[in-house]
Image (cartoon, rainbow, N blue to C red):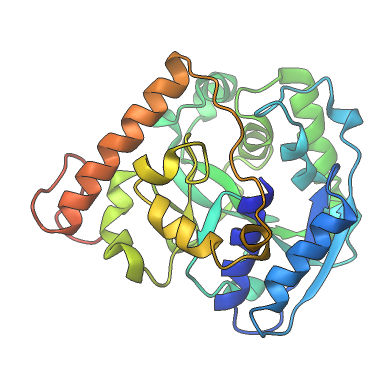
Length: 301
């Protein structure tokens, strides 16, 4: 994910109106890795702040892993690790073409968390969570890849601990995302979808063309393969865009490794097949040749 981190951070800085402060949470990055990332950011010629917080993943070893790692749970610790009253958390599997500075003052109302809605909760893939909510399973299910957090309130109400307790008790299918949707159910301020535009969702496609000129959107690559996965630069609908951004990083210029070996099984085979199909359809759709099933005829929010 180091290559993805370079692209994510670089693209955020390029479009940010102001001086962002980046904090990287990791249990394995070396000082040399952080130095290379700093070089990528410094090459943008903009002011920024930058630091690394080392987090111990051992307390999460009994939690369900995600791609063999437990770093997904680090976001639940952020309010207790930093002194700020508010923060913006971002996954690494993004490419930002939007100014994220408005999120510094995003209206949270009475909520301690803001996320982008993903689907009506009854139609979400998190069936275990829906069952746990029972008759209260109303409203929307939210994606946790982009989070605005009221850190002061999280600390005061020990909200991170509540999420961790939920995970320990329920071993959710969607990790900390399930926990956030349960603990904050019907108490989540909504982010505009432009700040978390999931690229594999066809209703989002009108916002994502023409491909190389996308502006005002944060692209979130939520499915596998990712644009940097082995061979995915040729089959992922947004592989060309991601690799164009990656070539501008110090990680690429140093000759860093991007993708690891591929475990070719039925699940990965299905992922690559869907990605290739989406690439063909998106290319034809962008050229005005077809209107694929699920893509709205007009642009919607």
